[in-house]
Structure formats: C-alpha cells, structure tokens
Length: 348
Image 1 (cartoon, rainbow, N blue to C red):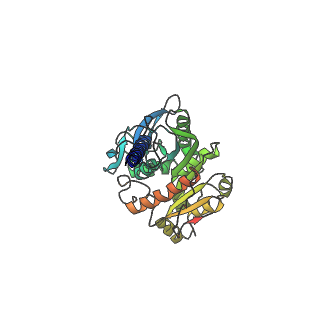
Image 2 (image 1 turned 120 degrees about the vertical axis):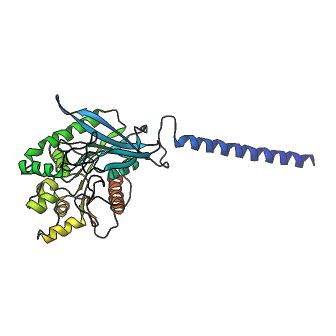
C-alpha cells in the first residue's frame, strides 16, 4: 500500500508539472503575438493606418503626400476630404496610427491627370492591410477631383481647358509630374518610415502610369510596377501610344496591366482592335499580367466621391485588390501563389 501511494503521488506531480509547462508555453505564445516593440505576428490581422505629410519639391516648392501603412491600431470611419463633386471621400483607417516595428515594401503611386492623392482610397487602404506602405502625392494638376488637404476647387471644364492649352504631345508639358514623383522617391529613401528600401514598387493610374514609367526610364529601377488603364484615353481618342515596344522590352521586373471591360468595348467600336494594355503586355517580358476589370471604365479605380458616375463598386474593387495584392505578394514578398484564375486574364 505504501508503494502504491508513492506511485500515485509521483504521477500527480508529473501531471501538474506538464500542466505548468503548457501554461508557460501558452503565455509565451500570447506575448509573441504583439511584443513590446510592436512586431506583428503573421497570424494577426493588419489594419490600415493613415497620415499625410508635406515634403520639399525644390528650394521654393513643396507637395503633399498621403501615406497609408500597416498598423495594429483600431480602424475608425474617416472622412478624407470633399471632392469637386461636393461629396466626401470616405474610408476606414487608424488616423495617425502607430507603425509596426518591422520594415514593409513601399508603393509610390501616381494619380491620373487632374485627380488627387486620395482619389483611390479603397485600393490604398487594402494595400496597407496587406502589409504595404503607399505614398501618393498630390501632383500639381490635382485641380478637379480632390486634394489631400483642403477642398478642391477645380472643375471638369477647367481640367479639359488645361489639356486643350497644354496638349500631351510627347509629354514635355507634364514633366513636372516626373520631378514631383522623384521627390517622393527621395523622401521615402531618406525617411524614418518602416519601409524596406530594397522593395520599392511604382504604380499609376492613367497619366500616372506615364509618370511612373518616365521615372523608371530616367534611372530608377523598381521591384515591380503596376498600371491602371495607362494611356487608354490617349490611345482611344488620339490613336497615340505613350510608349512604343522598345520601352516595354527593356523592362527587367514584373509588371501588371489593368484595363476595363467598357474601355475594351470602346476601343473595338472605334476600330482600334485592342486596348493599349494589350500592347504593353505583349511587349513586356515575363513575368507580366494583363488583368481585366469586368464592366470597368477608365475611372473604376477611383472613389465614389471622385467619380460619382463611374467609380468602382465593391465587386470591382475586390477583384482589383485581390489580384494586385496577389501580384505583389508573389513578386515582391516571394510567396508561392497564383495571381489570378479569371479566364479573361492573360499571364506569361
């Protein structure tokens, strides 16, 4: 009986010891989810932080830059600004939320002509939640839709008058966009933001696509590039291409070209055969992607307040963000994933 008692006591001690070890392991795992330095466990869901800064452009001028970034702080409904439509650009972010103490890839995004740095907030917020910084400046032609700070006071007529008085031609009238984006790149490379400076991505909408490509042609080599309907209006109405085949053939990084289904229909009706995105994709080396936005038009990438009659709906935004984030996760973060399963999309 005495021997049996000692055996039972030993078994009880071992069980208690095992329980104690399990408790210690659980506490350690909880501590790892968010440590004192704010380093995020991969299992945690990231939120979108937002702030804006003024940066120098040259000795006399400055430009405003909107910044979205990953944070662990709680998101709240946020009103960015009032567009020329009279509507408020709305989103959900942690305004001035704290950064996570680890470096993330950075996207420098150029908006289309007469747009604004906060013209595509649904896309920029989604990119931040996926673990990317997004730096989007107000170019000097941000007169029609909405600026980062202060209500926009331009009109569509004024934007069209500007284009009439400053025809695109070879782009020399819009060189200010290139220098503005170069200023943003310099700012990102010298800032204390938690960005991985070896993983800078360029992206642009419409004329913003021309802008980022010009920056690349002048010597900056990004990790990847993506384009939202670059040059489609110039192709449709003027039958001019922003860039010829040799420009795309010299690319040595992954590219993704989005275009709208409605744009494709317009081009076919005009007898042009195909959208400009198809030309860009055809002449770009692998890996490259031609990605259709179903029923999308030239302004599907914009927020409702910016383009009330043609903004991207929830389904379109989801489709854009899903494939864009997959593209970046694969070719910037190195994840082994499929970019798209949409039958209309083309890849190589």
